[in-house]
Image 1 (spheres, one colour):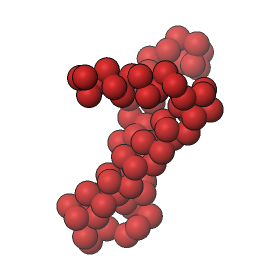
Image 2 (cartoon, rainbow, N blue to C red):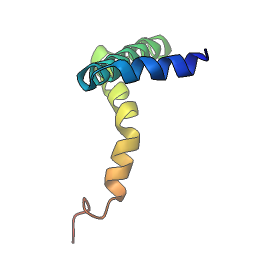
Image 3 (cartoon, one colour):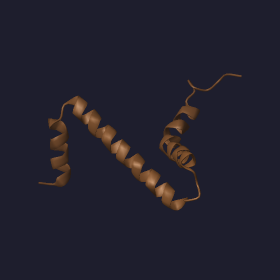
Image 4 (cartoon, rainbow, N blue to C red):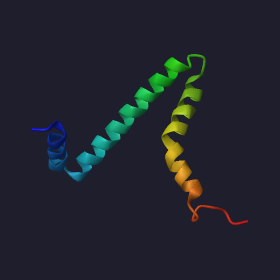
Length: 76
């Protein structure tokens, strides 16, 4: 069986709360890996600077969507 199909089968067998937990776990893993990567690239930066950079990278796409949304723009 194709591994992607097996993965879909596993997710379908999960309850909604289990799928949400799996998504949260994957997000946490990705964030941890990014922080380790950034620390390797920028050993001179403080932990706070690394966390700010990681947050910017995780939020960049959604922040761009918010800036472009007419409902979020302030009227002058």
